Length: 181
Image (cartoon, rainbow, N blue to C red; front, top):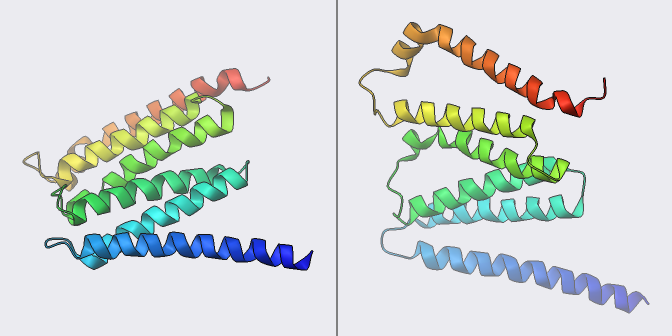
């Protein structure tokens, strides 16, 4: 019986070692391309691998939506870094930081689906708020408008209260049917 458990353990170790070697091989192969940096490709695949590990944890631990959120977020960030490293997306990381807000908003959708069996309104409103915030910040990061973010905030700061209040009201209204009053 002990040799059977040893074989199972050895098979698991060999499986995960094989996965790691395949990822490293693909990483170094793509990193050896003329215009791709080995380090950036390795970082991108590391994020994808961490996302896959988080997805496995989300599946294994049924009631842990944080792992599903992390899996989605890490996989989107890893894919973006991979496309940037290969030169397919030509956007410097110093200007791409608002994508984290967009990726966070998109990563909330599968969490809501997993937690409630459908896209829950509170997750949908929060997701839309993060995505809208990301797109709003992206306008300033890419310098699509002739003024800075600080001058915009200085002039339009009451709009931030309006949007924040609207988001809270929409979350409250959307979850009103879920409560048992």
